[in-house]
Image 1 (cartoon, rainbow, N blue to C red):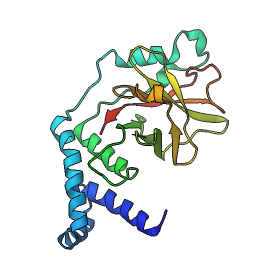
Image 2 (image 1 turned 60 degrees about the vertical axis):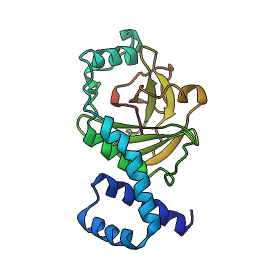
Image 3 (image 1 turned 120 degrees about the horizontal axis):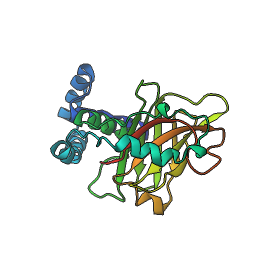
Amino acid sequence: MSAGDDKRRKDDAAIAEYALGVLPADERAALSRRLQDEPELQAELRAWEERFAPIAEEAVPVAPPPETLSRIEDRLFGAPAQKPGISRSALLFWQGLSVASLAALVVVAALFLTRPGPQEAGPTYVSELTAEDKAFHLVALYDGEEGVLRLHRTTGAPEGGHDFELWLIEGDNAPVSLGLVPRDPAGRLKIPGELAGRLAGATLAVSDEPAGGSPTGAPTGPVVATGPITPI
């Protein structure tokens, strides 16, 4: 990536935060001065404001139904014979997605996105997976143009001899593995086309598995975090 491309990506992220009103005061003041003299930045700001407008209008706090936890737990772990020695209490609660947290997700997503434009090559989805004790936090962004799931993990890493595995949970279907969560803080997973079409409205979950991933094709270890998949 050239220095110019890197600067544009940083500007995009800053303008996205500016549009949401979450840019730190000193950075906001500096960007406001630039906006007065740079028409290109003004156009980018308008593009981000238009992109965020539907989210601001439609997003409402969402709490999962009471049975959500037990349903996810049952689908992830199945019969007791499939998970010997695993404590069911390790399963973490699904946290509702509020307008504020959605805004935070979009800011993080802006770090991954290319410059906003009038045409979209494919759908874009985002999911935030946070452990109840905050020991694990992952943001996943699906880029429909490239067909990849971009991952940004800010906290939490597997212990030696273990890997984190990412699962797609869609309705009452069995969990489907999307692959191992990269050990590097930032990484990407290629999503097959048949799975990409099932992302909307589904849930992502991360489980703690033996090195190399689940030996059974289904989650065998405790669930680290879950999060709903939201279109942006």
